Length: 546
Image 1: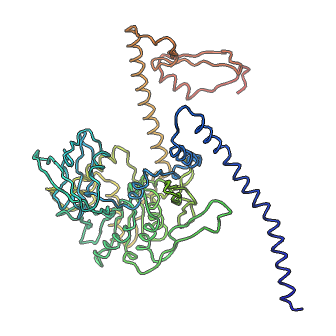
Image 2: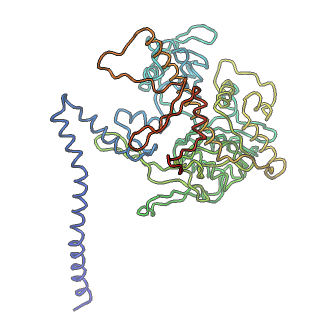
Image 3: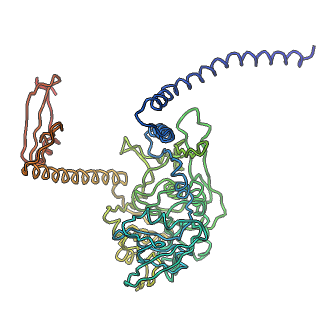
C-alpha cells in the first residue's frame, strides 16, 4: 500500500470530522441571526395588520436601516436613502450638470458669487454680483437656494434662461447651456484677467495654492500648477483652511508630490479580528515638488484628507504648519450600496494615523486627548469666528470673476496680506517661507500657546454664547407669558398649565432628600448671582459629611 493510499482516506476522515463538528456551530450562529430579526419582523407585521392607517412599508424599512446606523453613535456613519443617493454621489465626485457658478442667497434671491473657470456661466457672461430674478420665467423671490438650484440643474445640452440684475442696476436676460461641471479644487491667491495668479513673489519664487477639497482631479490639478511654475518655484504656501477632506487617494497622491520617501498615512483597524487589514501608504520619489519647502495653513475646520496631507508633510517633508490644531476627523469610511437600489450605507471601518503612528481622530469624550495635526513650534495663529468671517469677506473681491477687478497697488507681501486680506496666518506663512529661503533653514520661533487648548476653548466659548442666547429667548418668552396673563388670557380647560417655577428675574433652589421631603430652600433675585453661587457651591449632607 502506498503513502497516498494511506493519507487520502485519512484526510477524507479528518475533513468529514471537521464538517461534522463545524456544521452545528454554523447552524447555531445562523439561528442566533434569525432570533435577532424576529422582533423586528413581529413589529412590522403587527403594524401592517393593526395600525389605524395603511403603513408605508418602504418608509418603515428606511427608518429601520437608519436606526441601526444611528445606534453606532458615530457622526461619520450614515444611511443615505434612495431619494438622496444621486445628490450624495454628485457631492462625493464633485461633478454635476448645470451652469457652473458659486451662489449665495441675498434678499430672498440668489446672487452669483463667481462663475467657475471655463464654465457655461462664465462663457454666457455671468459675473460676480449678478442677482437672479427669474429662471426660465419663474420668479426666484422666496424660492430659496434649493428651489433655485433645482431649476438651474438639468440635462447636458439643454438651455436655461436667466433674468438677472447687474450690480449697477441694469437688467439683462442671459441664456446658459447646461453642461457637466467639474468643480475645480485648486485655487490661487488672486485673480488677474479672470485667471488665478499663484505667485506671491515671482522674484523670490514663492507661490500660493489653496485646496478647497479633495476629489479625483485634485492631485492632477496640483501637479499641473507645480509643473507650470517649473524651476522658478522655490517655496510654496499650501492653504488647507476650511478644507473638509474628501478622497483618500487624492490626499496620498498630493502628499507624494512633495515627498521622496517615508510613510504618508497608516490605516489602523481597531478590532483584533481585522488586524490584517492594516495598511500604510508610502511616498515614491521623482515628483515635481520634492525640493520645494512648504508652509501648510490649517485651521480647526481642516479635516480628514487635509489632516493626512498636512501631517505627512510636517513629519516627512521640508515643511512647517501654521494656524490652529485641525478638526480631528481621522476615520475611514466604507460606502456600500444596498441591493435593489435601496440606498447607501456609509460606515466607519478603521482609523487613520499620522506617519509617527498617532491617531488623527478626535475623542469626543476626552477633549484633552491628542488629535489632528498641531501647528509647528511657534506657529499657532488662532482666529475667532468673527475674524474668519472678516477674512472671507476681505478675500472675496480678489477671488471672484468680476466685470472689474480690484486694483493691485503694491506687492502681495505679508503687510498686504495682513491689512488688505485681514489674514494674519497667511502673513505669518509668507514671513516664515521668506526666512526659510533667505537663511537656508526654518527660523527658530519661540514656543506659543498649546494649540490643543484652542479648539476646546472655542467650543466652550460657543457653548456659553449659545446658553446666553437661549436665556435671552427664555426671557422673551416669559415677557410674552406675562403680557398674555395681564390681558386676562387663560389656558383652556383641560390644558396643563406650566407653573412659573423658573424665571430669569429670580431663581429658587429647592433641596429634597431621597424620599422627596424638602430639607431647605435658597433663592436669589439676580440669576447671575445664583449661577455664580452654584458654580462655587459645595453641597453637604444633612449630617455634615461631604
